[in-house]
Image (cartoon, rainbow, N blue to C red; front, side, top):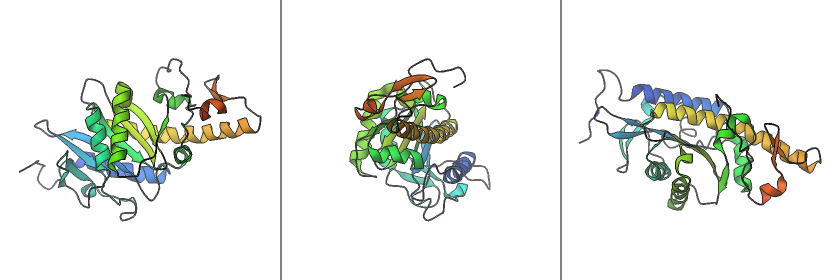
Length: 259
């Protein structure tokens, strides 16, 4: 039987679960997701070095209005999908989260949301031009082919792409066609603190929302004849034809110190 201890009167992984509950509220407040919610997870280790997944429960927005207590955040045993602690039910998209973690064991956090501006690019099926300095390190922002939400084909598709890009998956964002954003974070060759990883994932989805809006406006300006292409850090990185032909659009120069 799985047993994890906590101090008397406290809940297991209390600090981590408290933080994830705050992240849910922040993501809702910033329009980084909608009432359909999405699902967020990160990995932690117990005192014996065993991995567990800290994860939001299903219906976190509809049922709980995006206001979760630490005790509602789930502690899940990987692969058995046994809920060790927490209230509510496990989302069916646990299959996608597990598939990501299995595809690259260095990944420590997975954030899937329905961010408003990024959803424009996801529903268009187009790759999102990556323009801003804050998002340059993400490289190409690719929209994956459509697969139904919560399905095994979607989990397999994501896992295949995560495996294909290797270390790039340790700080990466995909758009899921008609479904939203998927952010993965980790660190090569060492066990990154899961809490730090989910904080970094939040920063990525937040800054990517600005990028999505700016990229849309640059596309409109090109149609109006006010710009001759997409611009990033003072350089023209391509145009609408490049976008329609699915060429990667981002500034390939050296990322600035401090990014």
